[in-house]
Image 1 (cartoon, rainbow, N blue to C red):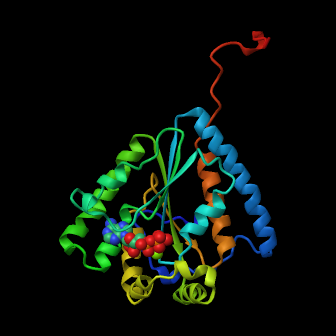
Image 2: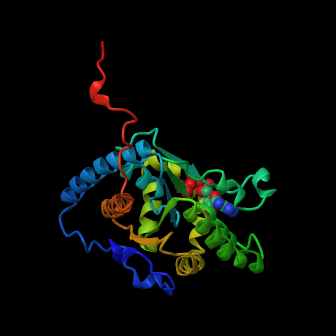
Amino acid sequence: MERYRIAPGTDVDLAAHDPSERLTFDGPKKLGKEELGALTLRLRELQELLYAEGRNRLLVVLQAMDTGGKDGVIRHVFRSVNPQGVKVSSFKAPSDRELARDYLWRIHKEVPARGEIRIFNRSHYEDILVVRVRDLAPPEVWERRYGHINDFERMLADEGVTIVKFFLHISKEEQAARLQSRLDDPHKHWKFSTADLRERKRWDAYEQAFEAMLSRTSHPHAPWYVIPANSKWYRNLVIASILVDTMEGLEMRYPEPEMDLSDIRIE
Ligand code: ATP
Ligand code: MG
């Protein structure tokens, strides 16, 4: 899974990352789904341990082009985890109340507490993605934010937050197919938004903004992973594997009981 991690200082060219890759798993889709089942059960155990130990906190950041599959990752990868142990924060266009403050204000309030997994469905990265692409702030304003974001995540990591960031990489053709299926399938009509068509026209500008993000904000304490996401089951498998590896790396232990439990008799 290391192959998907962006090493600090890499000048990322998304054209060199195949969104259809299934390299580390050649088995048929069915086997991939069974493997995902095993990984999601392991994630359930690791989350319980995280909560019981009450020491670590895990922040999972999801960014993607529209239709990239953020919702699908949340639904499938975390399907077995105790709902009390994982929370999702979704960041839409900021409200007036949020816009009246600095852009990290709404983000900082949502960081995970001890023992918690927190998923960011979009994040502070929107402030160097959509803001940059749609000219919502002048270049000198968003340019400074790469530094702010690096400092913010450094501070979180120093304070004990484990950060993992996933960019779900789909091709422009795959996005066309997914948007089309939202038009064709009556059960998906509600997901269709003309705003997605408007943003699709800016595909190249978004790719550049994602490349700058990946090149400038991946660090050992807060790595970016570029996930091949044209295939949904492969995407889920890779993300689940990385999360299991990351959590196993925390060397968590169940806390020792405060007294000798062998003497206790339940009457
Ligand atoms: P998603 O597309 O993430 O599944 P959604 O479809 O339910 O969510 P949308 O309203 O389409 O909801 O997506 C949220 C929108 O808010 C996106 O277009 C995103 O770029 C925008 N957004 C998020 N953060 C910011 C920000 N800081 N400044 C401006 N726009 C933002
Ligand atoms: Mg959307």
